[in-house]
Structures are given as structure tokens and as C-alpha cells.
Length: 68
Image (cartoon, rainbow, N blue to C red; front, top):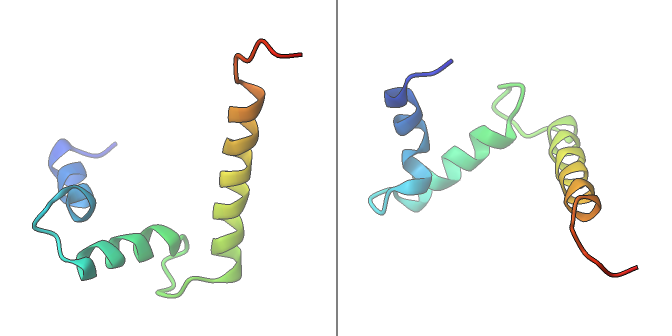
């Protein structure tokens, strides 16, 4: 569990108008570098792609379309 202060500090690069492009890119890089290796590996990318695909499939399957 994280505190609100830690959450706010962590989300600052995305939410703040004061955040520089470098801040935002650094934050994004940290999100993609899942194993903390300071590099984005093939495995890191695959984890994100699988998660995105699963989310997309769930969104498509969970839609409430009335079309047959």
C-alpha cells in the first residue's frame, strides 16, 4: 500500500503542467522498465503488449452492444 503523498509524488510527471517533457519521458520509461534494469527489454514490451491485448479483448467482449 502507498500513501497519498507517495502517489502524488509519483503521478506528478503526468499530472502537472510544471512537469517538463524530460520528466514525462522519464516517468514513462520507468513504467515500461518493469524489471528495473534501466533498459526496456523485449520481455518488458511483451508484458505491456499482452496486458494491452487482454484489456482490449475484455473491453470488446464486455461491451453491451445489442447488435447480433
